[in-house]
Length: 407
Image 1 (cartoon, rainbow, N blue to C red):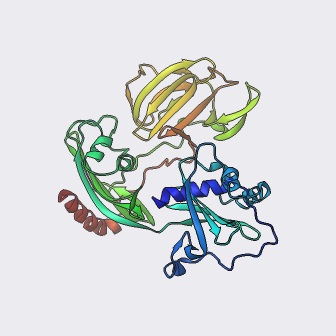
Image 2: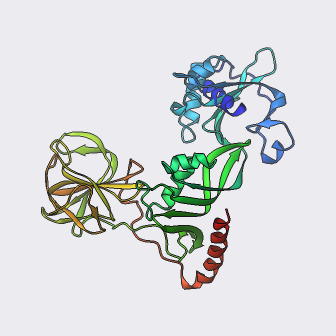
Image 3: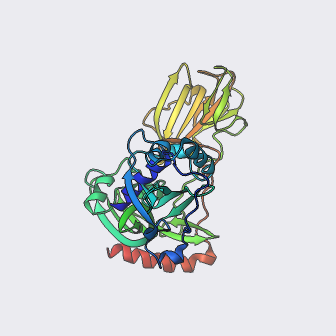
């Protein structure tokens, strides 16, 4: 109960004005470090014995100013806090429903000394209203607990997670791990998953933060394993044969090109004559240059958009990634919606259809439905387990596979 209350308190303090004069003497109390917290009764590193604490939940349309204003904090002080918070926390991001706490002096003035806003059950922001004012971040102590889950899909993986007592968010984590191996849009009844994982807890409350220690998925009469192993300083998931589960993307969807425009939230559009987001990469290339699918997948759209992308193709590669290819002069012969394409299969040809000033390919990548920079996604397949690490991996893999089967 305290966590949500803390969040509300923090939000209220952010928007309320502080009614303390600059000449008022400071408390002789400082934030404690982790060692001192064990010695005193503290919250957020602040000794409780020195203050009266009021908890709350941020309400709709409340801001740092309105929250702190209720405790006599001036508008000027709130503005200064906003300046101090730059680079630490954007006070405009205070959200309704979050907990906050106000620490008041125990004298008759009951002046606010600290305001704490909880971004989530683990992370919080401390606004120190004393003296020159300061803003800092902190974390509530957490612990990781190992758990297991096993279940069978009846309607969806999300529902199956609930039925076996695990968080449905664990399904998303598994879809990322197995995304290049299993089509999570095509799961069948009786497909089975087994997973050994760690989940983070704060004050006994489970968070949707997971570390998958091993997993298996039986789909379409085949069983797929995910075994984490550190090689060359990087931990990846491998199957039981030591091959990385991460699939490969081509570096670019065409062979001969130059980048004429990059991924940005503000680009001057040559046709519209104004600035707007451009969530893709433009590759300038001669009309008719073949355009490839950067990875295997299914064609989910093939259409024409007059005031935008012109001839475009959209491909779903797995449950995480989708790509779009726009301004094509024409489509590849025989390309149809619902068809499966292979990596580097020609899907169309560079053109200037739609809203375009010249031949180019506008290429876009979406991760879980959100646009991401195509130049930063992983493009090359990870190396399999090396011969030097084969024995160590075999030992780890056999042990984890045995544990999974025993769940």
